Amino acid sequence: MKASRWLRTVLAVTLTVSVTGCGLNVNAALPYQVRPGSIRPVPSLEGLTVTVGSKDFTENIILGYLAELALSAAGVKVVDLTNISGSNSARQALLNGQIDLMWEYTGTGWISYQGNTQPIPDERQQYDAVKAADERRFGITWLDYSPVNDTYAFGTTEAYARAHGLRSDSDLTAFLKQHPDQAVFCVETEFASRQDGMPGVQKAYGFPVTTLKTFGTGAIYSAIANGTCNFGEIFTTDGRIAGLHLRVLQDDKKFFPQYNAAVTMKKSYLAEHPALAGVLDPVAKALDNEQMIELCKQVDVDGRDAGQVAHDWMAAKGFIT
Image 1 (cartoon, helix red, strand yellow):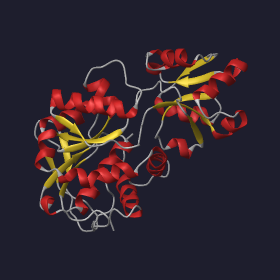
Image 2 (cartoon, rainbow, N blue to C red):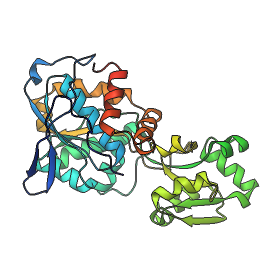
Image 3 (cartoon, rainbow, N blue to C red):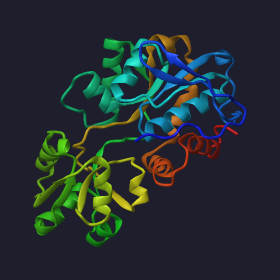
Image 4 (cartoon, one colour):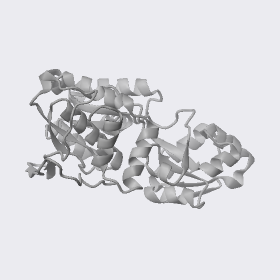
């Protein structure tokens, strides 16, 4: 999922330059006049230039813009390098110093970057483990994690969930054991065979699967909504959850990996500018999955610009004016 660049230009001119060696494009101007709210100017950060990166999907782009707006309110000069194609490219840009910070996910760090195969079920323990490992191996540190947890889940329609009293995967299991004809699932091809996907979660909960249909990620949401399948694999902060009136079933046994969002940067960079944590941590703590679903919906369903959505949320929360 890709979001458009900032559409409005109020006080700034966009400058595009090439970043040597990566082919990344820098949008070097923020088209909003950001005034302090609860985030006040920080003398130690005044005049500091920080390059903010993000991956190329809606949620991560929004998070990147939230960081940029917070830093701007604190007196930082921001360079926008959001919308980098792919996790590996974004991570490499951070390691190479082409960006100074980006939002990452604990499960991604633990599995994709650290090479572990077994996730840690507890959010705090997963965060602590990946933070320690990333500092030790790569010199990357993590600010405290947000309640935003963009992980796998099963979804169904709100109407179907209400009709059958479904709120969790344990509810789903009990229902399908009594009504196996209703066990129609839509999943991605990869999810159908991964041990941290369908085989593993089915073993963990013990529910039957009568019919398993495979789709691309985006098609699953509409397949649930139109009744092609009763249940489907979804991501817990996707804006289409709200747009299509879906319900996220709680993974009450905590089978799926934890993917809490947190700001990452080089440990040495944070040591040089420790005040960055005080600016960004309150923004992370103010977010949760319900709010992130709504923000992503505004972009992916309503067609709003990601930067404007981020700006409006920051202003509504009083972080900026």
